[in-house]
Amino acid sequence: MNVVIRANEDEVALYAYDLVRDRIIHEQAKVLGLPTGSTPLKLYARIAEGFKRGEIDFSDVHTFNLDEYLGLPEDHPQSYRYFMEENLFQFINLKSENIHFLDGMTDDIGAECEDYEAQMDELGGIKLQILGIGRDGHIGFNEPGTSLNSRTGYVTLTEGTIADNKRFFAEDEDVPRWALSMGVGTILDARELLLLATGANKADAIAATLEGPVTSMCTASALQLHPDVTVVIDEAAASKLKNTSYYKKTADDSEAMAKYLANARRKAGLE
Image (tube, rainbow, N blue to C red):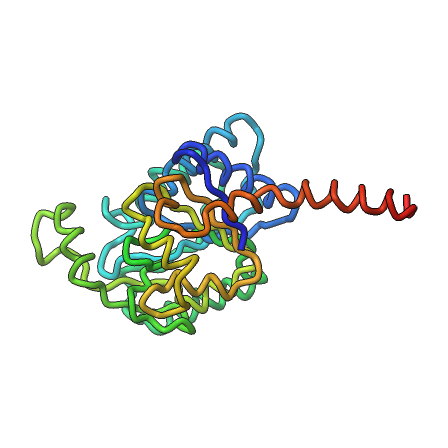
């Protein structure tokens, strides 16, 4: 797991943008998994700016979003489909037919979720899955207690999540109680994972994710089991980590290691 600590959320977004652009251009990561929420907003703004400058092209990219509220149509201002249109999709050349989203108004949840996974499989799986993290350590809508082998399906939202969302709705009965979400197992199927977190309110979750046990009570901790994960956080989100100096030391290891090996080979007369 590669842990990158940057000074603030702007630097986190810049690092993440450079990684996303590199993967799309050089590694043909043409199937992306995308999150919603406040954390990726600065990344999405940088992607929009990069597209405007001609640095990145989405004409042959497919996207799959992590989750969607059950019972909200895609044009509802609080739906995640609406969020993505407002904050990213309208600013880039992503084809509408390449945008894959769970249907919050489906009348067959099982079929909807199975079809979503089938669409990923048909495209060879997600190549780069971008993630945010909840204050309780959840990824996607995989609340604490969700199986770490879970697949895309419906999830029951916690009372805390429901209470947090009430301010967005005129009536309490309109607040979604369920959502559709990629499962933890689905997320771990991606070729590469990129987790972003900023702010002191994410410090406990990041500490549990990186340095705690792998447990369903912190679903993000399952990322410890994945072979290719980059975690990009700011100093505030890193404030409760015990191993900070090690993470900072290893962040630039590839360049230092290359120099070390080159010098060792010269001393051994191999170059």
